[in-house]
Length: 94
Ligand SMILES: N=c1c2ncn([C@@H]3O[C@H](COP(=O)(O)OP(=O)(O)OP(=O)(O)O)[C@@H](O)[C@H]3O)c2ncn1[C@@H]1O[C@H](COP(=O)(O)O)[C@@H](O)[C@H]1O
Image (tube, rainbow, N blue to C red; front, top):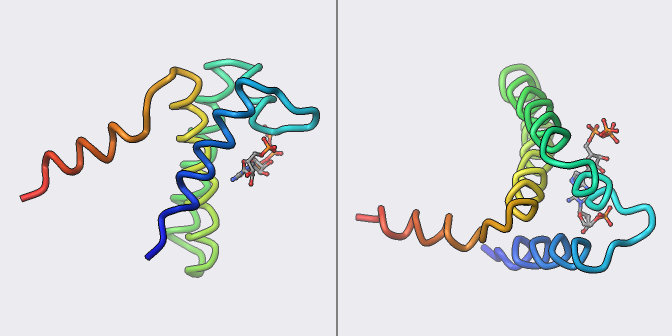
């Protein structure tokens, strides 16, 4: 499996933060601030749960992708390095 897209997405979100781009949804979220970001995370999580419980696999995958993107934006907003999540998982690995 190729996880390169995650790194690409993290880098583009970082780049949007340093070089804001007209029409960027990421910039809309980052400029709106923490409350907007956590509100969207809550909404996306609810949409994911609904899809998981009632919808076909492609909808579950799509909603998870939305949720994951919003997690990455939330991390970037607080300058939290996503690589630390991977390190944490690795440290738990038996
Ligand atoms: N991966 C994503 C991604 N996933 C989900 N979304 C957006 O997340 C939003 C959430 O869905 P909603 O139905 O709640 O959308 P909405 O009604 O427009 O949102 P609100 O007005 O309610 O805040 C949608 O607008 C999606 O387009 C994403 N927006 C951007 N990316 C990637 O982020 C990168 C930078 O994108 P820009 O910042 O737009 O340039 C690109 O590589 C994109 O592919």
